[in-house]
Length: 299
Image (tube, rainbow, N blue to C red; front, side):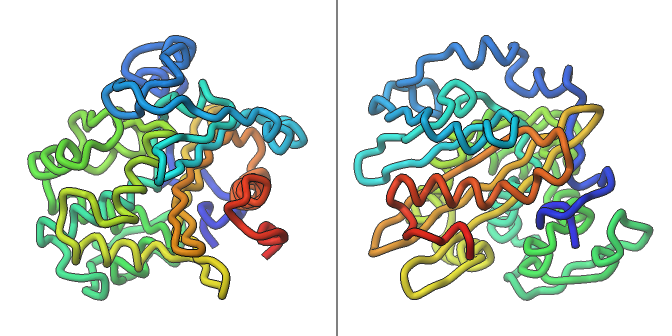
């Protein structure tokens, strides 16, 4: 098993995070306090004013019972109004880690570097942190396995110029890639907030990204992690870790009764075993908010 599936990890290169200094730099060179001080009514992209968020800090109890800091963002796609738990943190940009595999996959298809979700991609040889990564696999398999070395190879074939152009076009986070095409989502400077994640995912879920419908459909299919008669969940995990800093993500959207509910959770992971709580906490919050039916968090 791999760390993005909630098991106890080693310090793996795929989900390696920057040091705390680099982590702060990834938030645009400002301190977390400065970033958090931005207007809670501002849109996640460009600071444009948007609908006033509904703040539900009563749901912080899910984090407090584990003695951790975290946040949650849910976007009402009909009104554009975000529901925020720990609103300041929800608008603080952080390294996306493996959640970047979502736009990365779109870019891989759009540039033609990967022909389709089933085309087998070369591993490239060498030792990996996890033995299951040490083989060729399709992008569909690679995103499920969170195979970072394989995605790094895809990034090198895309190249920095095309990667930057597509990150700009997709309006993803702070758009900053730095100098290393195979590291920027793992070690910075790319960073994105939970609120920005929901807005990006809303566009993907509804086919409104500035990319082909085919590529968007393929990535949606690759992200589906749960289907029931009542709802479906499309999601991706992420885990950034280094020198006392450990950040976990779970982002995606729920489809239920013809409606789409984009969400993003991030939380500190001071203990490795806390990673397994990312999905249950997010599901419990969505139950409380009426997005998921009762007991889905136990599925």
